[in-house]
Length: 158
Image 1 (cartoon, helix red, strand yellow):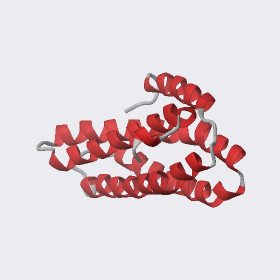
Image 2 (cartoon, rainbow, N blue to C red):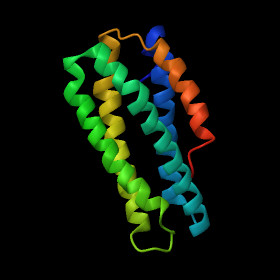
Image 3 (cartoon, rainbow, N blue to C red):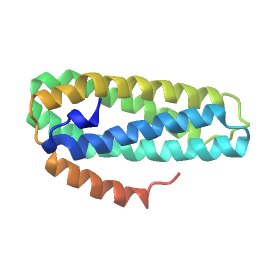
Image 4 (cartoon, rainbow, N blue to C red):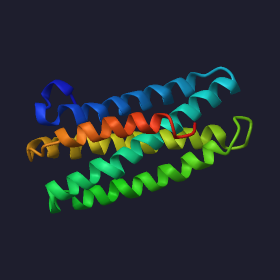
């Protein structure tokens, strides 16, 4: 989704989420290109922390607002997103408990990246355009998400 096409009342909230999506993609790419176990571990822990925060923002603030303001047309989409989050959270927990030398470490980080790519694609190609077309006002959510993200950056363990 191109940020320049997002209306003002939705721009800050969707831009925050889009920026998180871009950063996660970049980190997964860096993981694939990492040369050492230490580098892999640092990248994997960073992506796990950032995904945990992103998931919390969506589940605590963004999804409830969309469910409330968007109603039934968003119900299935949001339910699927929550299920996708559950799968991602499970893999995040596994990766955080592992070392790069453990069996399946690379595979788990790679599959996590694939889950995230699928989730991002659905949000950016289906959910976000629908939010824009329904003219759901996200200004309050943007402020709440930015404040919560700042708070979580200091408390969520990598």
